[in-house]
Length: 134
Ligand SMILES: [Zn+2]
Image (cartoon, rainbow, N blue to C red; front, side, top):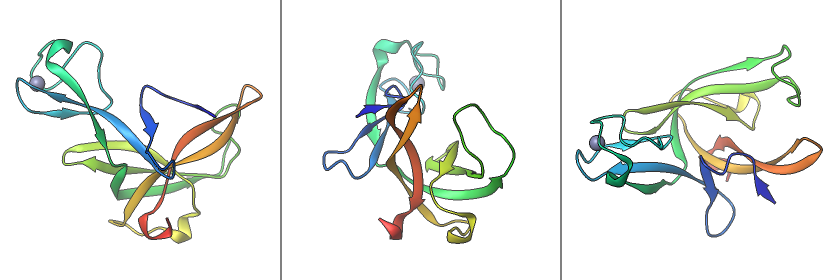
């Protein structure tokens, strides 16, 4: 099955989790996600200085909220979204695949592949679940 956003993540070897495609800069040593095609957003080095570094997909959940209203075409509410720290200093919006009741602040969540429908085609999206539920 195809990935929904292959520039952001890839399947792990066993296919049970998603690895996040971050970039490591050889000039400043900084890590950035998502990888920017112009290079390092931290020090301005060009793309030739950046190499891909896969993150495990483990993240610390900083906040979360359930959205009941209509979000976007193809997405059926309610959905649970949150913010998570994917690596030290890297905080991104994430979508969770479990109800809010299963979540607590500061819990460790894991990126996993979840099939969704997009343009009448099934693709694998990246969603997060509590690490302990894996
Ligand atoms: Zn840099």
